[in-house]
Structures are given as C-alpha cells and as structure tokens.
Image 1 (cartoon, rainbow, N blue to C red):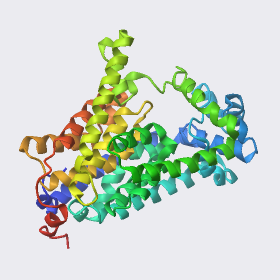
Image 2: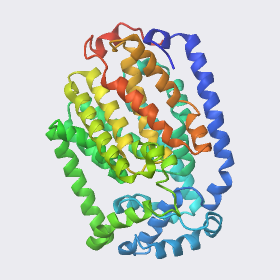
Image 3: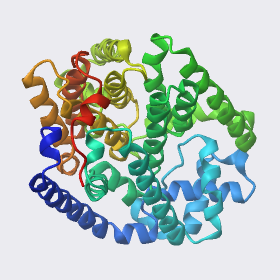
Image 4: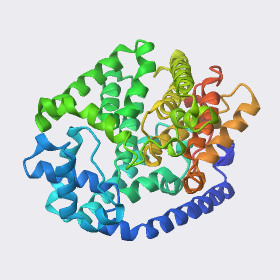
Length: 421
C-alpha cells in the first residue's frame, strides 16, 4: 500500500499496486475456478437464500424456519449438493431478506446464482463510484486501481464465490458514511438498520453511537428497523418471528454446521476461546465481557469528535466502529469481513493525510492495512486459525483510536495534492 498521498500519485507506485492487485485477483480467480463444480451443483452459500425464496414462492412463509421443509426443498433442487455436503445448508437470516431473492426463483439455481453474482458486481462498482469523491486523498487514485483493489480484497472475492450478501452490507455502510458526511444523521441510521440482515454486525456498530447519544442516528436506525420487523412478521407471522432467535441460537451451536468453531471465528469470541484457557469457561465468559466493554468504550471514545463537520474525525470514528462491530460480532465468517474494505479505505485516507501523532503509529497502520489486503485470509483458512485475524483487527483499532485529532481538515490537505491527470 502507498505510504503517502504524494507517492500514491506516482506512476511507478501505481504500476506496482496494479501488479500486486493483479496477482491477488489471479489467486482469487484460481479459488473461483476450484469452486466451479460446487457452484454448479449448489454447494455455495447462495443455496440457502434460494431455498428460502422457494419456500416463500410456494406460499409457506410461516414454515420458513422449518428445517425439515428446508431439507425437502434442497433435496429437490440441489440433491448432489446435499449428498456431497452430508446435509443441508440452513437459511439463518431474518425473514425480510428472503423476499429479496424471491424474483430469482423463476430461474434455475445455477442461473439465479449468476444473476446474483452480477448484482453483487453492480454493488461493488456502486461502492467505488460513491466513495471516490468522498475520500479526497485516496480518491485521487485512478479508477482501475480502485476496481483492482476491490476485486483483490479476499473477503469480497469469497463473497462473490459463495453468492453471499456481504457486498450489499458494504454498500449500505458506504451510504451511511456518505450520509454522515452530508450531516444527514437520520438517513445514516436508516442505512445502518438496512444492514440488519446481518444483525450480528449491525447491532454492535450502533452501541457506541447510543452511548454517545447520537439520537438522530438512533432514530433513523429504529425507524427502519421497525419497518423490517413488520415486513418479517408479514412474511413468517408473529409466531415465526418469535421462533427466530431460538432457531438461530440452535443452528450456531450445532456442530454439524461448524459456524462457531473458535479457531475459525475471526473475532474476540474466537480469539479467547481458542486460547489455552478455553478449558475454563467462566474465565472465558468474564474475559469476553471485559473485552467487549473495553471495545464499546473505545468506539464511544473514537466518536468523541466524530462529526460530519470534522471529516478526519468522522473517518476515524466510522473505521473504528466497523472494526469494533466485527470484533464484537458473535457469528462471523470471512465473507462478512467485506465491510472492512470501507474501514481500510478510511484508515488509509487518514494515514495518507499524516494525521498520526507518531511516525511509528503510521507505520503500524500501513502494516495492518497491507496484511489485511493480502492472501493472509486464505492462509489462515487453510491452517484453520482465522481467530488470529482478530489480533490484526485489534492492533489496527488501536492505531485508529489514538490518532491525533490535530491538523488541517482533509479537504484542505487534498487541495494541496494535484489530482491524477
């Protein structure tokens, strides 16, 4: 990654970044190629969305969280995948999201996957389009570097391969960030709430803002959140809504699916439970509570000057909240880390502007950004130690929180750096 706004604009640095991103994209394409058979028969995560949409299409929304019905649907649509997987892939998202995939049921599973893949690509380019003009320094990089960096980011690539919805969440957070830049806090809260289809990420994000009494953001979040609850009730009924929390809890703790294996969970929960002291459950629970409190306090501290009138403070606070929401999430997989694409850009924007009080902080920041924009995810997946990612997240969060609040506004700094011709 570039070390300063000036070096970012040099053609030589651009070429090096282009080569690096191309190498990462090649690796991602290789992984995609290796996954082609699984995609064709329905082994990707998209299968669970398609299953839920099929159940709604058949008019059985009130049975959406019936595992027997889900198994029947998957054995009918994707029998090879069920056989190869050794079971089904349950739909574990809120009911309102299943409606989004309902139009895709008129197509075969394979065709629907590629339509969703194309939609995801569209969201990615929308992310690039809307963000570039709101990042005065990083935004000066040419479009091809933005596109290359986006497609090279491993969590995004894994989202595309799995047919997941994490890119949509990334887009919603980008819109929330832009709304805050425009001082539209109610809209920002609404965009954050729109991401409640991954409530394990969205709820931790809003807690520091609640402590900071950002009531307009909370109001927007509550308004849209209430609408989504109403839509869910209309989809699965009130009984289905009440059933959902217990349903998700049981799935997360079912060893058949392995969603909460500590070594494979890149957050505080996974890091603590993977430590040698995991044989002392009460101690682990106490450590989780302590670290969660510290992280929430750190998030509130980062928002101490995080207003739309102080752009660099907003960048710091928003990036910090994204890191905290990932660290505090109870259930998280690699594709969910796509939201960190925005966090890394915001961190890079501040670092490129020289807004750190010490040079070592800046160096440590770039080291973390480089690690998180590398094949590290694939390596840790291979050795089943994704929990170690949480260490990098914590270090990066530390550099974000201690950034100096002094210096010129980013807009002024950007005006002193000529744009690429």
